[in-house]
Image (spheres, one colour):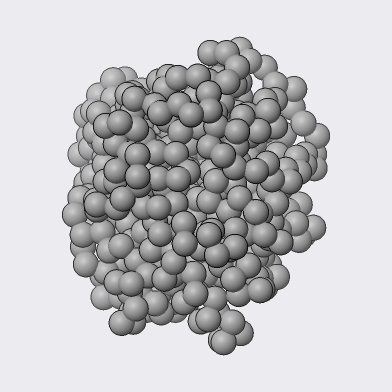
Length: 461
């Protein structure tokens, strides 16, 4: 993912990484070692343009052609998963079998540009994995940009859209999907689409699989969107955002290198930031074996996390000794590794119709968490709104190990390449018992977490 010259780029964490079978590098290279971990250490990296742009550069390999009954080779070696395996691994399956599918709830997905094949891809995905088609509403409040298959930026976003829609649906197959498309990946256009979704009160949970360094977004737009997220919370809307795929780093505002930073909007205190893990599970049955922090040097991807340079520590994080005066990110995590990625049907990749790819990254994690939230909304028979106070209360209770898989190994140190080809290493953080700035509180054991969330938020509001 690189910054568009002269633009203000909100980086799509295509889960930042689309892959099928093999991981491929998403970044270039550089020769700087950054180890500062204090807020303000990135203050020289300011966006001086009015409008920044988010540019997606996914990497992917081919898994095969969508055909019902197919077992993909990466499943045989437990390096990719379909819906059955993921919902088993995270203990979502018992909820689905009990009728908690997100029925009656709406997941709003915000992305730039479009995927012209999304409807047929979703239908083929459902056919491939034995799911029913959901109600999919495609909304372009400011007009739809014509799809240019020769524009790598637009093609990358088409992959992100496809991933987001298919996997939010895979987790909550009964939920309606509202796909709200910004006309471009300029910050102002993305904020405008977000404004529409919240002001029109479109859905119960919003998923955003993109971000950028906090100091790269224009301060006026930052404040506008912060106010929107507060409004969403007041309306009972849960907002989730990917914590990023560059570990403790983010691209500099000019896109030439990397520096220590968390990703916005995941760092906003009214947003639930979703980090990444490497899931170890059986590729055929989904039996859960364990997880560690996501960090794949071979594809230069790692779970985004660290501490905000803008937002003070919110009250819901006040009991965590490892968090100082500033907001810690992420709040939760989920499978994001490329070599344990999710199978996705994507026909606008340029490789032909009905092709299946493996996606990884925190942008794969975020829409799946949104699906769990839709299920929890149905379970509670109401919107749950801002999740973070309840999540951290559970994290500090005797129910923590029942509701979460606590990730205690791995780190998010990042090495990438700058524009001149030098290696830049940004020293990150280590996973540890309880909350940490790599995987947050951990990944969900949904069968136990959903009732706790529903009970806690219903009784405290």
